Length: 117
Image (cartoon, rainbow, N blue to C red):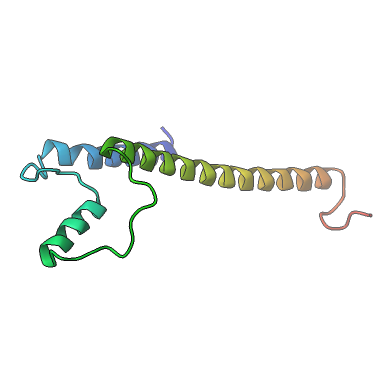
């Protein structure tokens, strides 16, 4: 097994442990919604500190349920990951193309940057 494969396997095990350990250890069992988002927790804290607080603005779209809200958030994350993957793939492809062009030029006896126009 190569060094990179060992590192990747170790990272996957760590990520899986981070996902499973809170469930196994029962973290948050004493709460009504143990895995509520930061927005909901902030709203709860604000209403406890100042019960008459009124928000400055309201959302443009209020999802009908928490499941729909979670699905929209997951869709947003997937689109962001897709854009990042496309960008890094494009950069890698351009770099490989430039390296291939330089290698072919050197094989033909032309130094990079000295081609005639």
